[in-house]
Image (tube, helix red, strand yellow):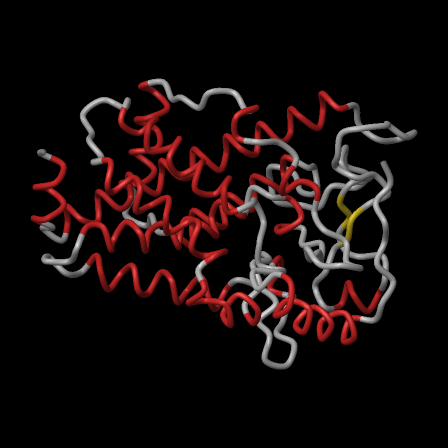
Length: 310
């Protein structure tokens, strides 16, 4: 299936999105995975974490984590922030603000991390509040498993705009069961235990893994020419003005099930990539849980320890 290109000038497109967002969908163009997938990934990750040796995560904390991932796209309290702070990766630090709109996630992600750090520094902080805020931070890390948000290729779920079919390609029920071996659990624990571990590093690592998965960069971080997925995502954008502003674009093939045109991938190849990226999002969710537990222990968080012992 061929993607429908958007041929409107950037200023007109952005102002149209801002206005229509208020009318139709206040989370646009912030959304990557649907809110339901964000929270489902968090819950599946919490279940897998529980099966790792020597750890516990009370149900109410797992639910708080999932609630936070969902709220970042759906809470009525953050409507204005979602309109003015988009969830695109600031690739090569080229995606700059447009008037009062932050077109990359840097500012809002930093704000979410700052609040999480404030909570983690308090020995008497409410663990439910800590995990809900951790979920808000995790939301952006999960977003980095969506190629359109990392390339970045502009999209918005609005009439007349090109939406990202990857976002809703598959339901959580259709995905393989997410589980981790003891070795994989230990690897994630070790990653969280590193002295320089922090959410920003997790996010950058997830974005890098996604760009490697769609063959836009190699293992050394260098650009790949004629990568295997160039018919789906292109960087930089072919339009010189859009490229200068930091945008990539969608290719001639659409990431969707159905008729396969010449040069496009077979459906099983699309499924394989989506499942790989979904597993990445869930693995990073487990990593975040290990990280939060480590930080709570360092802060002497008695409330969290008491809940874990129940």
